[in-house]
Amino acid sequence: MRTLLFPARLIGLAALVVAAGCERPPIEATQTGYRGTGMADIQNPRADEGASGYPAALPAASSDGPKAGDVYQNVQVLGDLSVGEFTRLMTAITAWVSPEAGCNYCHNPANLASDEIYTKVVSRRMIQMTQHVNEDWKDHVGANGVNCYTCHRGKNVPEYIWFADEGVQSRMATYAGNRNGQNAPSPAVGYASLPVDSFSDYLVSADNPRARVVGTSPLASGEQGATIQKTEAVYGLMMHLSQSLDVNCTYCHNTSSFQNWETSNAARLTAYHGVEMVRGLNAEYLIPLKDTYPENRLGPYGDAPKTYCLTCHQGQAKPMGGAPAVEAYPALAGE
Image (spheres, rainbow, N blue to C red):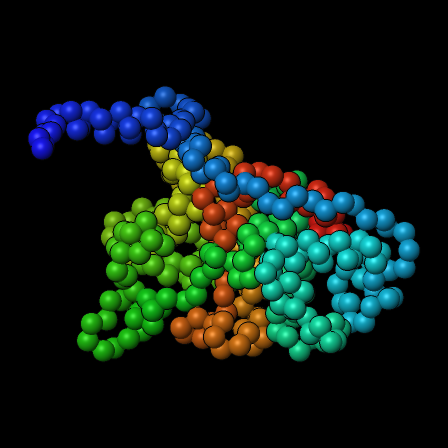
């Protein structure tokens, strides 16, 4: 039997032909600013593949008839909906959050009015949070709004949440090996050796400092407090924003002057409102739920799960590709 030996160049050519046939859509770049400033909107068509769809809206229900709050016990939110509308929305939320466990993920089937299962208490607060976002943060979410699926994507717990990192602890540590807040390379900051817990510095309270580095004093605190550590922390946060939306820096900024608002893109103002929104959601809705969660749902340092840009965006400039999230469910739009 003869053994056929193919030249390496033929094997390489065959591999190239196969790869060419499997080539994925190219990256698209659109100039958004003056030539020479590097301002371009970078679009990755692959980011939209399978990421924008969510369960089709259920058929509309009649608003006539008795209200849910008058028929069912312990309906603290959405009680002004008709029984039909209320049931429709509960069915949708089940598909968005617990398609496998069903209603029992939050409810005791023997007593639906009971609050004994912690997930029901959390879900009630999350519905209120969703209404708050859609009503009070239109500067960020626009007319599309958000619903439970925006974050959960069919999972009981959103895939992208965050807890305090050990970097918070190491800043105060006195033992040998104190990293003084520096992290090992982490995906949270693009695998750069930057402070990984910028989120605790900037995203947990309205009292947090704004993520700005505009000091003019070299290497010193400067009038804006632009220390090297703060600069690194801000850069880590910006890396998170860039990765969460799958965009580059010039999606928001003009490279000729990153801090100049007048020459920045409109997306920068939208992002600003987003950061402000996230701070408020963590401070007013998520962190206060700490005592509601069982211990296994808390972080390694005992803090409650929190949200950030990746929670909703998940690699898209507009969550779910910009699909309308509240149009079919106006009860989630707030007042």
